[in-house]
Picture 1 (cartoon, rainbow, N blue to C red):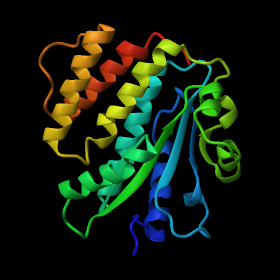
Picture 2 (picture 1 turned 120 degrees about the horizontal axis):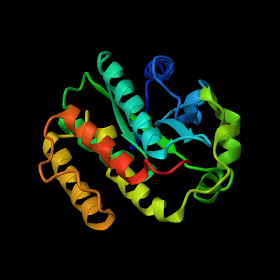
Picture 3 (picture 1 turned 180 degrees about the vertical axis):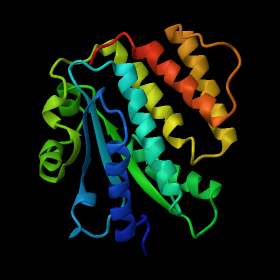
Length: 235
């Protein structure tokens, strides 16, 4: 019995081509690397359960602007694939893939639509890249990496300020921007309220009491949170 989702090889190729095309038409000045890693880069490996996209800043990146660029790229990939009958289920954390894809399927019950798990990895610096990944991960990246933009060597050497990490992980875990197209609107609004309340209470980010309700304004609200929290930080 197959418990894990398996991606059709045709869909794998379509997603990889879409990532390349979207990046070719995007402004990537704040990004040190955009690449594809893991089993999805090798057509000899089957089955493929998800596709992994890796992003890093460079030494001179504005961290807030860099995070916003990552989210825009993921959203543009999702919009492009939706035109081809695919919906991406994008998650920064591996552990969230199954529940995220499950919710996405509930919100898109048409069985002719394929839900593609996309693991979106963002590393702020080489120290974080080394300390939070399992043994052998960096070797696997170097072996399988398809570079779309920049270089893995562009990742900053200087570790990011520790006080930034907690809020960065929080915003990443809420994963609102990347799930905007896939999840029910009601769920998005609950998460947006929780996140907005938290960053206002603990980080002094005040973007007004009225939450936006349409996707474009929600995206803008999230971008403002990133700029307020991280816009003063160079990577």
